[in-house]
Amino acid sequence: MPDKNNVLKGRPVVAQPARREFIARIAGAGVVVAAASLPHELFAQAAEAPKPSADPAGTVPNSAVLAEKNPALKPHSERPLTGSVTAENHNFAVTPNDRMFIRNNLLTPDLDAGKHRLTVKGLVEREVTFSLDELQRSFPVVSVQGMLECAGSGRAAYVPNASGTPWPPTGGMGCPKWTGVRLRDVLRAAGIKPGTAHVAGQGGDFGVIATAAPVIRSVPLAKALEENTLIAFAMNDGPLPKIHGYPLRLVVPGWVGSASTKWVHTITLLDAPFKGTFMDSSYRIPRIAVRPGEKMPADAISTEAWPVKSMITYPAPNATFKAGKPVLIEGRAWGGEGAIEKVEVSFNEGASWQRAAINSGGDKYAWRIFSYEFWPQSAGYATVLARATDDKGNAQPIVPAWNPLGYFWNGIHRVGFMVEA
Image 1 (cartoon, one colour):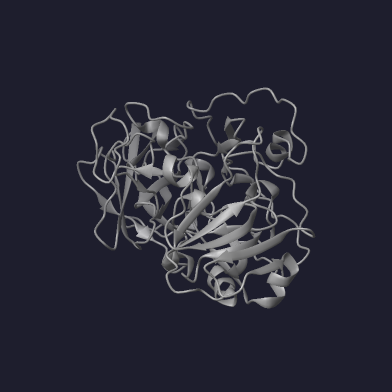
Image 2 (cartoon, rainbow, N blue to C red):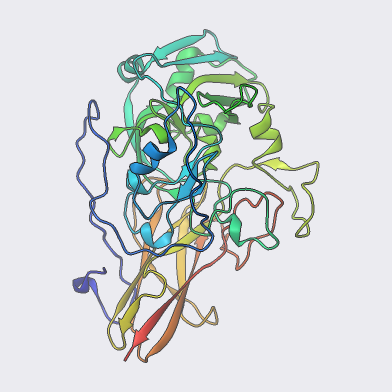
C-alpha cells in the first residue's frame, strides 16, 4: 500500500519502496526469498499448467522449479517451461527471485558448480578455461541491477495473434541484482584478436531429443565490452537459482533476454554474427514495419535492445478506493539503451497527461520507479494510463507496430479501479 505519510496534495510524489540490506559477500549465501506477497489477479491469457511428465535425466523437474516461485507466477507452457507474474506483482524496487520470469528454450539442466567450466575461444590470442572459483579469484567482482525481458513479452496483446508463447502485456520481465565478473575482463584475459565483431555464448541446456539445436546467441563486440555486461554467478546476493542459469550465465541488461545465455559454458569470439537457430530463425523482427498478418521478410534483423516501456504496478486491476482520499499511482519504466526522460499518466483515456515523479539514480539498466498522487473526487470506475519517454524522444505508442513473431510489445499500459463514495 502507498505510504500515507508520503502524500503531498496536488503534485506527483516519488514512492520510496523499502530496500533490503544484503550481505556484501556472496560466497555460500542462500537464495533471497521475497518476504511479502502483493494482491494479484490471475490473467486471462495464462493457460493451466499441463500435467507433469517424466523428466529426462540430468534435468531439474518443472515441479521443483515452480515450487520455488511465488503463487502469483503462472506457467504459460511446460516444454519449454515459461511463466511470469503480472504488473501488480512487480511492486518491488528489486525483483525477488520468486517473481522473476521463467523462459527456457530447452530443458533446465541440473549442473554441478564444482565441475562446471567456462571456456573462451575463437578469435583469441589464447584459449582459456576457468572454474567458478577461478573466475571469482581472477577478476574483480561487481554487482549490477539490470532489466531482463523476454523478446516476446506482451505478445498476447498483438492483433492478429503472433506465433509463440502468449506472454501477457506485463509478463516476462524482471529487474534483479546480478553479481559476477565483467565479460570484458575475461575476454581481455584471453586476448581479443583484430577482426572480432561478435561474441557468442553457448548454454548447457539440452532438449528432449538429442538433435535439438544448442542455445547459442551472439552480441556485437561493443555490447560484450560494455561495463554492465556480466558473467554472473549470483542473483540478489545468493547463488543463481537453477532455473536462472546456475552456476554461470551471461547478463546483457537492457537487451532481449535471449542474449543473456543461461548455464553458459563456452564463449566464442567471431568475425560476424553467429549463424544458428536462435539468431537466424527466431528473435528476429522486420527491418521495416510490415502489414499485420504478413510473413517475416527476408531482410529481417536480429532483436537487440528493448524499446522504451512502462507498466503500472499499483493499484492492482479492479482495486477499490474511497472518493476524496489520495491514491498513490506507482509503476516501473525502462528502456534498452536510452535513459527514461519522463513518465506521464492520464485519467481520461489519454485526452490529457500529467507528469509523474521518477526516482533518480540507480544503475544504468535498472528500471525507474515512477509515482503520481491521484485524488478521486467522485465515485465510479476510474482508469489510469502510463507512458514513458526516453532521452532520445522515443515515447511508448498506444499500440506498437505488429511483427510476425510478436516481439517488443511496448504499448501503453492501462489499469482500471473502483472509487466508492
